[in-house]
Length: 120
Image (cartoon, rainbow, N blue to C red; front, side, top):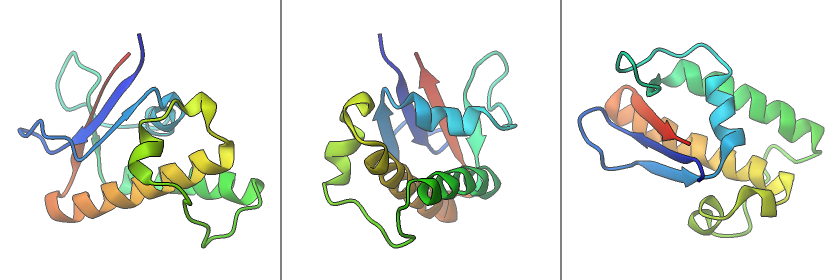
């Protein structure tokens, strides 16, 4: 059994972003204080403040890895997000997660905040 991770607008289950097995990405969210969407469930709100903290962690990892601020993915995002993260180099994961944060931030501009739903 693996991790299913989805970001969407409350009331609309159409995912803005889905990722499978990316525990490390989920941990960047769950290791910080987040507000629960529904009592008794693990779904939580994602807003600009939450993304700021995730982005700060990713920047620290990027610097430690020696990646340029302007480094970008050389492979298609959709193929990588569906790949098993254990088979991807750390540099690629950092860039993949940075791209995911950009996508989420764009969606938040349109919807104010998102719901992160996950099950393992």
